[in-house]
Image (cartoon, rainbow, N blue to C red; front, side):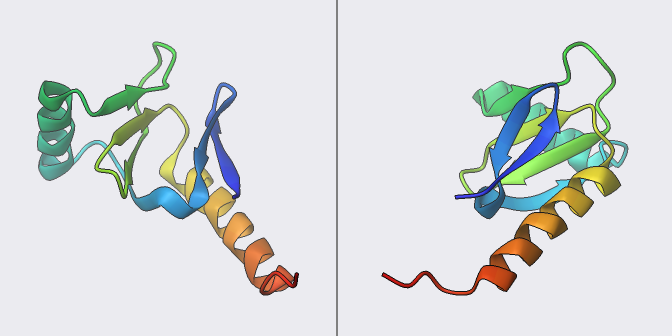
Length: 90
């Protein structure tokens, strides 16, 4: 299992990430608000401004202070490494 750094020493499993969105749009604001009401938000901004919203396959919403482009680049690096390794041989 590969992890990506989403800021301040926090990591998320790369395979569980469904989407990375900017927090400025109205639909994403609604998604975050609904997730807060349901208790599905994980805030790892450490009091800073939210710059990325990460949606996972378990419907959790993670708020990060790292730019969406930075997280996407880290996710691309992890998925590229997995493709280079190929299937596990036992």
